[in-house]
Image (cartoon, rainbow, N blue to C red; front, side):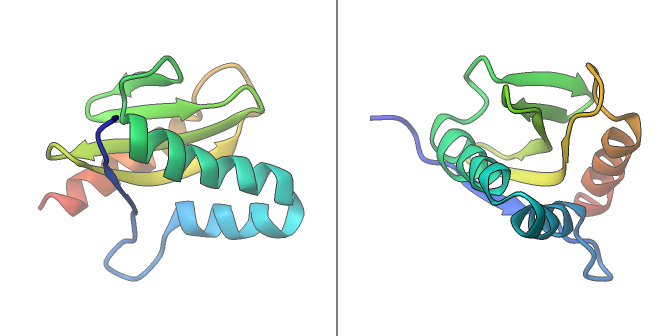
Length: 113
């Protein structure tokens, strides 16, 4: 049986959450991609952790969970069993969106200060 992890959606001190806003927008505009993104967070990351081929180290503590549909979720591991998802996108090019990576890095620093 695979380990079980907890996945949290990052929210800053003012209550803003890029990942929640992105998921809400995706739910309205493309329910199919929204369902895939939720599956990625709750089934892939929560069950498998970062020990599978769809996870890629990006920068510092930030990792990317990706899917062939173009979905990318930027997250970090907090301790042994918690993942914090900070940002998401449907890719527009073949590399990580540096603005979202920087957002995730800033989120990590704020979360851990």
